[in-house]
Amino acid sequence: MTALSRARRRLRRATAGDRGSATAFGLFLIVVVLVLAGVMVEAGNAMSARGHATDIAQQAARAGADELDLAALRTTGVVRIDPAAARTAATAFLAQVGERGTVTVTTTEVAVTVTVTRPGILVPLLGIETITVEATATAVPITG
Image 1 (tube, rainbow, N blue to C red):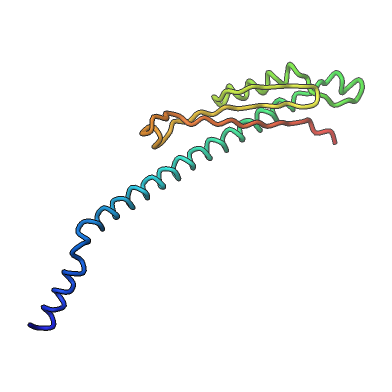
Image 2: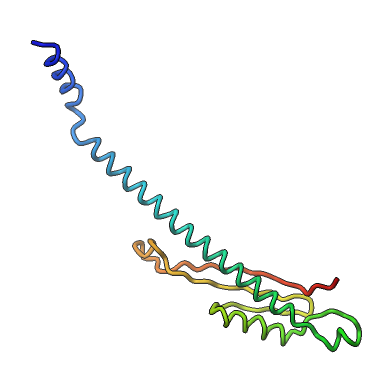
């Protein structure tokens, strides 16, 4: 018996109990990697939706805060927001960009909460059709 045949026999005996276990482990690892990739894709989608909602809320709040009560400013020099005009301006901005939200106005600040709904990329496989995020921003008029 040659050294090569003895080495082959030893190798066969050493691996005799491992039939198929590497295949099962490999398939398990592939599933884990695919699930983690899916989580990363959906997390990126949610982060993008949150950034978009924040941007829209900030812009709508600034649009509302630009609407000053000019009569009060000219007669008393007091800088304050015209609530009706501010609400109209912020709501018009939301409509212009096609998003929905709520606008709260006082004479000193405008608060806008925007709700953004995006379709899921991979989560429809789990029965979740959309991702919904909210963002709130406030703005005040510049006084100095």
